[in-house]
Length: 413
Image (cartoon, rainbow, N blue to C red; front, side):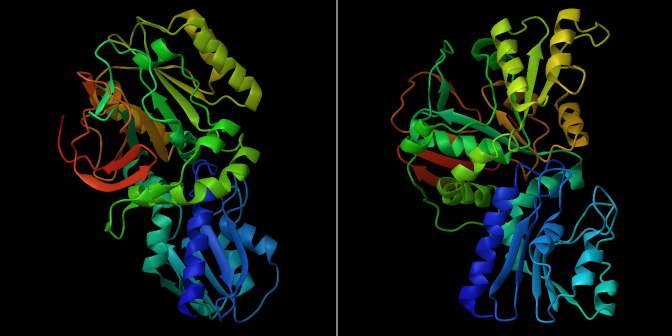
């Protein structure tokens, strides 16, 4: 396979992983590409929405022909267990590719990882491909991280002024990031399994948190560029933002067509002493009716978990959430992440003011990422600084007047 065809295959894996991410639920967003021995593309596919085909099964449904010279590349090792579908390993052996290239072994304990003797017995060679691992890591990181730690891959996000402040001292409700970022930020939401906000945001802003794209967002979007010249080879955070800037424009129509599939869970942390208004609950009821599925999860911050949730709040939660309200103490950030991991949330975006940097201050790992969007045309003098705005920089991008910083937490608050 020549260099250009190899490059095309890796680019397809990146695009397929990006399109799958955010729609596969607890399943990993796997990409699969089938070529002939010269590298010409025969078929491509990715994991479908939760409960649907895995990438390999979707691929072979699109290309049922059997040839001795086929080469299959898959970003994650084919599953070996019965779940909602039969084992993909059995199907791959049945279709008899000449060679299999894998990005990552599957850490899921249900999968017999590395047991490739059955492939060898069928005359199929199997090998790990480091470049395939690199291009697929941004999309698989959440799944790999959750299986390893029991917690989601966490992103803490804030829009800041040129001074690095996220709000005025009075915490006025005002726009900080520019409109040029809106489309990117909405598609970024679509890549997340869940979006979370703290009690202050819920009370003041009555946020909706759903994924949406408008014509205005498309018209005001500007191309993004990477400023950082060198990045670590295996860097999931920078890879995801690079993919976001590369693929958003061309994929926005598809994301709009599948708007319902890409909806993240909307997670609200509530203060039991300062509950949100009826306006907030009305918004969430409207979204629940629009998409026909309950996508809210409620955590209620309390100082006494023996005190029951009020009947009024319980009724609202029943309408909006598939789960009961969860009482949690203000210092139980660990419990918060563990519960979401148990629910199959691979990726979590925390919209940050001051709540999540404090709530999760002892819980963020080296793999979790800080996303700061600094609008150089917005000034909030003497405002409240984003607590992470001086953390070590991994990568930097530019979109119009916005500088995008990907940071890695290396210290305690």
